[in-house]
Amino acid sequence: DAGVTQSPTHLIKTRGQQVTLRCSPKSGHDTVSWYQQALGQGPQFIFQYYEEEERQRGNFPDRFSGHQFPNYSSELNVNALLLGDSALYLCASSPWVTGEYGYTFGSGTRLTVV
Amino acid sequence: EDQVTQSPEALRLQEGESSSLNCSYTVSGLRGLFWYRQDPGKGPEFLFTLYSAGEEKEKERLKATLTKKESFLHITAPKPEDSATYLCAVPAGNTPLVFGKGTRLSVIA
Image 1 (cartoon, rainbow over the protein chains, first blue to last red):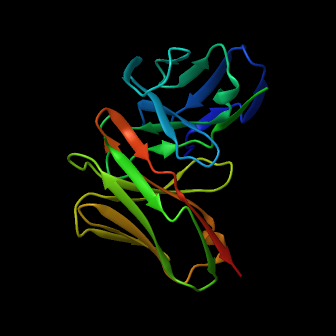
Image 2: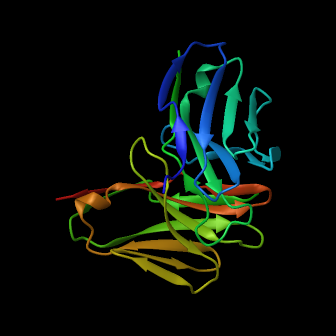
């Protein structure tokens, strides 16, 4: 059973560019959350998608946007990249009603902005 | 403000030297406390969920416990393969998980 799949694993972008990251949730999960993890820090919540709608949002600017598709997969888009956007971006999936096993995380996409 | 604080930031142990990691939290109406293990460059891997004070869960050399204000992750006779960052997190308000900064554990053979 495949877990959470994220692509690409690494990418390098130039300041001011736009980037799209992709996530396929674990089989049986319908809710996708995105997190940003800076080096040496814990993951910070960006937003959560369920039934193709953004349900919750953390303290991130509108440059960060997302989408969820009918097959529950999701994209994270970041516009006008800043050097400070360099981080590991994590996707986590779960059932909408999370149980004892909480959230399953992917291995992340390492974004470097130069 | 909902907060999760982990200590120590880093811990270096000799193989076989038992110790504990701490996670203190301030959140209204605890809806679970989650422990994750994270290896470098990887996503967090689920370890335990605790729901109520007094609850304990074990997995191999790890045991997690919960009080009303904090959780401990006890590591008994650790091995080098236990080296990782250990994260704790709680749901808070509309945020699915609020994470602490983690404890970086190094176990030396």
